Amino acid sequence: MAEYIAKSQPTAASVHVNAPLTNISVAYIQSQADFIADKVFPVVPVDKQSDIYWVYTKNDWFRDEAQQRAPGTESAGGGYSLDSTNTYYCKVYAFHKDVADQVRSNADAALDVDRDATMFVTQRLLIRREKQWHDQYFAAAKGWKDYTGVAGVPGANQFKVWSDFTSSDPVNDVKVARLYIKSITGFKPNTLVLQEEVFETLKLHPDIIDRYKYTNSSVITADMLARLFEVDRILISGGVYATNNEGATGAYSFIASKGALLCYSAPNPGLLTPSAGYTFAWKGLSGMGYSTAIKNFRMEHLESDRIEGQSAFDCKLVAGDLGAFFATAIV
Image 1: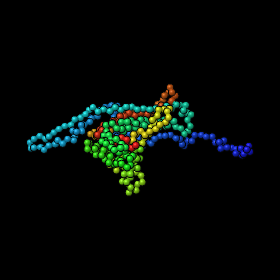
Image 2: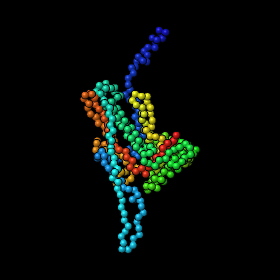
Image 3: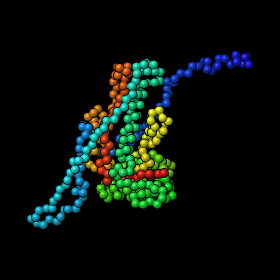
Image 4: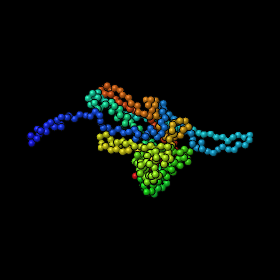
């Protein structure tokens, strides 16, 4: 045995000392494509943290009051009212990561601690922005026309959950909501936001597959669904966040609930331009508006540099009649 050991020297361990790789590291940085908060509704840059915006009374613009005019008489006339009680308030959200001098000086070549801190801060603020958007819009009882998915027989303002491939009819459900919104606003919804699990379920729905069975595509895409649901675009909400407190066992969840939001979103913000929602972004604070402003400054008493990010915004539901929310779309 002693002779065998001698012949096997040197061992693999003795000729190599483990060192950190310089061309690979692992960090769970989510793709910004999974975050939809800045894509659904127009972003309105504002100079002040709070202000009012005018809302014209919808009914005044829909009444049929023009009348036949007799010779030598006045024309029929009318007017419209304005509501000046609607306000926004851009809350400031911020987060930082300190990079200590000793940590930077002792870091291995593969670790760019300043870059990592910037990405870490940016990711945290993206999650906060996404959470805020979904808390304001992507739920029932927010101001939309609400429909609730049920496993049993649907009643008023209910629909068969779309994960029931035998009895549900998601295309008709969206059509009913689309026509309802058009009937009370004159605007056809142009956007459908789907939570990722809902999107994946719809791709497997037999009714939807049947409509595309003679195409060359083997996979149902978002663009294909958009044409089927007669909207300009479908956005997939796929962001994930940790639901546990620091130090507790890790627990994770999609940011969005298992729902769908059908709405009209103005292509661009502007005067006399309705939209189901607007995002007011305070550009007067940092000049960045809805984007995260990152700054780096010295914390001498900590012998550290602080990487800090912040943004200021208000996700405002401004026209609830331009949207419909499908809660519990799948089970």
